[in-house]
Structure formats: C-alpha cells, structure tokens
Image (cartoon, rainbow, N blue to C red; front, side):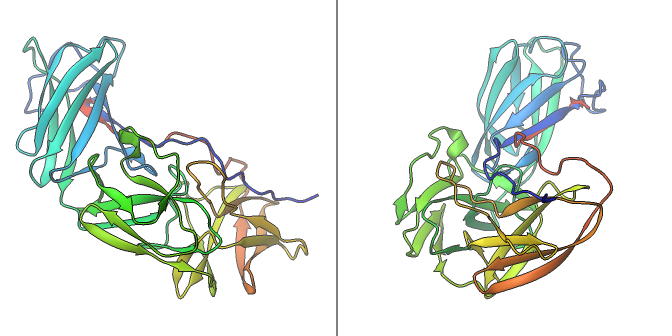
Length: 345
C-alpha cells in the first residue's frame, strides 16, 4: 500500500483581503473621538490580488480600490461618512444595508493612507484602517496557480512549456515592499485569449491565454513583457507555498527550470523511496482558471524519505523528513485582502 497520494489540482479557492480596524479590541485611538455606535469597530475588506490571502494590500498611486465595511460586533452598520486624508481620494461612500457599506478610493499621494469611517450623526469615529499608497516599482505577469498558494522561490516571470495549451496569467504589481492593487489596470496580450476571465473587479489582474507554442507580448499598464516558450528542462527546484511547512502530511512543490528560469507546465513525475512506478503530477486543468499546480501531498511514516522528481531525462533527488504530527498540509480556503479598523482590535 502506498504511503503517498497525488494532490488534486482543483481546490476551491477565491482571493480575499480582510482586516480588522483599529477599534476591533474595543479601544479608541488616542488622537480620535470615537462613537459608541461601533464599540467593537469594523471589518474592512478590499478587492485583492487573485492569489492573495492576508490583510489589506497596498494601493497604486492614482489607482482605484473598492473597500467593503461590515460591523465588528452584533450591531448594525450606522450611516457613515468617509475621510481619506491627503493620501486617499474618496469617489464613493455608501451604506448598502445593515451589514455592509462600500467605499471606493483612488491613491492620491504616496505614503501610508488612513481611511477613517465617521458616524454621520457626528458622534465620532466608527473605525479606521491604514494601508500604503505607492507607485509600482515592478510590474510583470506570472502563471496563476491558485489563491493563497503562490509558489515562492523565484523572483520574476516564468517561461511556459510548449505543451501548455491554456493557462491564466496574473499581473503582479509591487511597490514599497507591498503587493499593490489598481482595479483599472490595463492587462492585455497580442496572443490568443481564452474564455473565463471575470468581468467584475475580481478579474482586474488575471488574463487567461492560449499560448499555442509561440511567444506573446503582454501589456501590464505601461509595461510590456514577452512571454517566452520553451521545450527545455535542464534542472529541477523545490518551491514553497503560502501554506508553509506541515507536519505529517507534507505538500511538496517542484518546478522544472531552463537555464535557472522556472518552466510552467513542464511534465513532472515523482517517486518515493525508490518506488519503480513514478507518478505524474502538475497536470493542466481543463477549466478556468486553467491552473497547473506542480504539487503533490506526501503522507508517509515519520522520519526521512527520498523523493525523486523527473522531467524527461532530467532527474533530481530530494531528502524529505516527515514529522510526528498529523495535521493536514493544504486546506481549501478563501484568499482575502483586508483589515480590521483600529477599533476592531
């Protein structure tokens, strides 16, 4: 009986960014007069990068972001007004119902933006949250592999294996050490576009394409990038994911490389402890978002194990130690970008 199995490539995930405001612990910032209408503050949620799970991402200078508000306790969201100070230009602030409101902002100046939500009856601050505004220092695309499972270990674009027929690209905007969002980003290609891209703000940073084995030019705002195609794999590297280390159930991810550049969609197999029957992993999915996740789950007895990864004639062996625990390494979840206000803590 085998002690390992291949991880399903399709895990139900959607990106989100959620954070508690500064009042979420029942306090009040020293420099504010706080309203009694929200004693436990507010939750703030924003449209995130599509592979992002965490607190509120940064905002591109002159870029647009949409933020949703909800009560941090068992009370209704009051009627409110919003103040973005010098860093945020408010284009919309509306209470939708007792449980939610929506604020739309544009990045007005580089620095740390402070979004203040104020009671419309002038009783004081409902909550507030901070997030950075910055001009992008880097803009590029890389293959999308799912929300919250960004493959880490390579900085920058990937190459695409010639056998890959469909994939989804994600635009990465970085500045001031943060992932940045601009819901008005221009993302396009001179190649063939596949179906499935969301038409709402949720599709702001993704672009499904059909490479057809030829290079394509991608535009990311004012930046252009050539998507390179290769049939070569001359190395294999292990990459980590946003889920980090597990205990007994180990999720392992590997990529083929061409001249040190990762190759998305390169055919891969794994075998454990000399098993003569290697198992394929990282197959291309047939449905949007066309993600090919080069990972598998290793469930084995505690202790050291040898894992052999192969792509064509290229092989490499890795020493893996399985711990004593039994927690699951990978869980379906929603990716979030958001923040509690200062009263939410």
